[in-house]
Image (tube, rainbow, N blue to C red; front, side):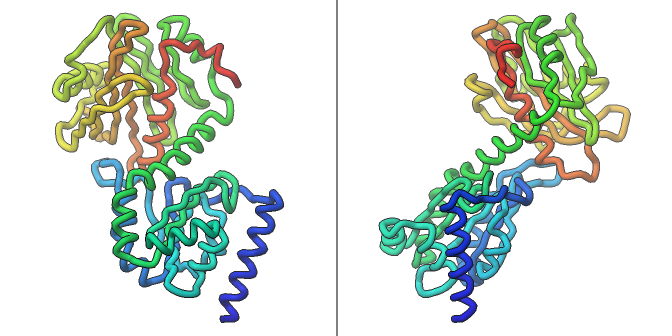
Length: 342
C-alpha cells in the first residue's frame, strides 16, 4: 500500500506539472509502442494488441512497422515520456492501472469504462510533447479483447499518423533542396520535395525518367511517366512489366515475382495501384524491398509510376522505406516548389 501511495503521489505531481504547462519532449523510438499492464491483463490481451501492430514489410524477412514492448504497469513512471505509450488498466480493484485511469479519465468516462467494461481513450501530447498515448480501461477481459479487435484499425492509425507526421518533420528539418525541386518543376512540370543528401543520379528526358538517391543506407526514388492514360499500369501484371522496363534504367534491376503484393489505394488524392515486393540486381549480389505506385493524373493528362527502393544489408528496412514513401507522397503536378512555404 505504501508503494501504491508513493506511485499515486508521483502521478499527481506529474499531472500538476502538466496542468501548469510544463511538458518535456517525448523520447524513444518512433516505431515502438510501450504497452504497460499487469501480468494477468497481458496474458488475456497480448495477442489482440500484438495483432493490431502486425502490419509490416517483407524484406524478404518480415519486419513490422511497429514493435510492441510489454512492461509491468508498476514501472509506468519509467516510460511516461516515451513517444508511444499504451496503458491497459484493470478496473477490478485498486492498483496502478486504476490510479492512472482515475487521473486521465473524467468521472463520466471512468463510469463508462466500468459500465461497458471496455473504454479506449486517445490523446496526443498528454504526458510529453510529441507523444501518442492510449488508455484501454475496463473490467471484463473478454469484452476488452473484443473491443480491441473491433477497433484495431482505429488503434493502429492513432500511432501511425503521429509516426508519419514526425518523420515528415524529421526528413525536411534541415537543408531541403528547393533549387533541385524547382529545377525538376521547370523542366517537367511536376514537383517532389527533395531532402538533404539526395542527388539526381539519372535524368533522362527521352525516357521520361528521373532517379534520385542518397547513401547511408542506399535509398532511391524514381519517377517515370507517359502522356495519356495507361490502364495497363493499373493491373498487377502490367505494373510488374512496367517496373521491369524501368529496371533497365536503374542499371539491370529486376522485380522478383515472389513476395509480390498489390492493393488498390490512394496516392495522395489519386486512385492508384500499389505494388510491394523484392528487387534484385541481375549481375551483382544486391537486392532489397521496394514500393511502387502507379496512377493517372488528370490535371496533366499523364500516367505516372513513382518507385522507392533501398539496399541496406543487415539493416532494419521498415523505417527507411517508410521515409522514402513519405518523400514520394510530396509529389505534385499542381504545386510549384516556389509556392511551398519554408
